[in-house]
Amino acid sequence: MYRFLRWLASPFISLIHPTTVINKEKFSLESAVVCCNHYASSDVLIVASKLFKKELNVLGKAELFKNKFSSWFLTKMGAIKVNRGTPEVSVHKEILKRLKRGSQILIFPEGTRNKAGTHEMAEFKSGAGVYAIKAKVPIIPLMFHHQSKAFHRNYLIVGDPIDLSAFYGKNMHDVKDEVAAYLHDKMEDLHKELDQKVADLTACKKK
Image: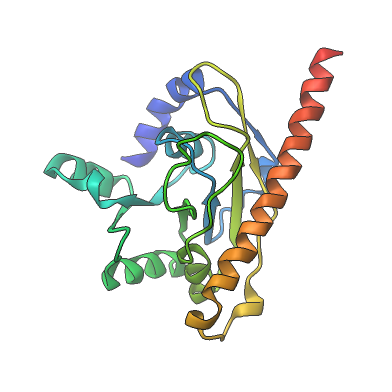
């Protein structure tokens, strides 16, 4: 069902939100936690249409699952319902199960949208790093250049996989904040790289 709907919707998503993907070849199909900055609900659609060809496993806030149809549809699409305040143990187990079977999980580590639309990212929640460490998978970082606006070009970059193996075997309660800060710094570096690439692309077009 996901593949069919993605095939059907991708041309319309690309028309409404034209997005150039930089370093697309770095997006591995192996198991990983995929982390991305977050501006709007359309971010999920754009990332799915550009990168997630076979399936989409994404964390979704519980409010989106309020009625039976939306709950059924989102579940079919691979969404995992999360109560942002206190995620249930069953949610943690489901995320780790999918990672260990070889899937990729899309997580927005800021935990909420950047409604101001600025370049500044909020502090990261610890979940993304903890899941990657427990499942022993890398993190694939993604970064939008700016908030997507209808019919305006945007850029999405794929960064080098982030290896967290240095934290394997450590007590997660003791290091989870350190891991979140480390991941935040890595994605800030990716944002700077993206800014430079967009500047170079814009300069080439003006010549």
